[in-house]
Amino acid sequence: MASFLYYSLTLRLWGDFMGAQTVSVGSYEMSLLSLELKVHPPLVAIITALIMWGISLVTPVYPVSDTNRISAAIVVALIGGGVSLAGIISFRRMKTTINPVKPERASSLVVVGVYKITRNPMYVGIMLVLIAWALFLSSHWALPGSLLFVLYISKFQIVPEERALEALFGSEYAAYKSKVRRWI
Image (cartoon, rainbow, N blue to C red; front, top):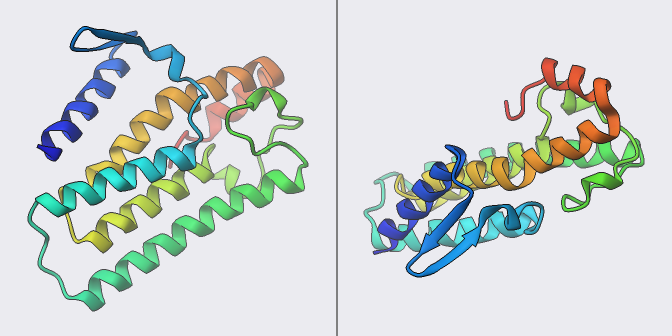
């Protein structure tokens, strides 16, 4: 049941990427635009991690030794945490906001440090932590949770952030966007 709900939600988000503007669940219909910049990305990650954990409880685990599983999870989580922290430090040095639901408050365009590699290092870091969580859970069925996070964050967080940054920084942001990838 949990796997069905998980993949149903993933398909609905994918359908939204393909152009749907509303989601219907039974007789309830909701505008997807109402989710833009509403849910803080760490909360999205926590919800995703809980879904992944639930799926790992009802699906077979991948047989791997605890030492290898935990070691791999720690390494990937540390890399993810480091990437996110590098993004936060870059924002702090430029004295701009890290509030993800108020991108219009950005006071400067950060294009240095880890932002030369990815436009969204904080989200890349969270994605890596979710991958580490799937490794820790030893569940290949939970691994697509990181994809669910990427789909949600891309649609409801990054795209609206990009609109705000284009409005604030114009051609400077457009030039940066053409040189550096959204994710990796």
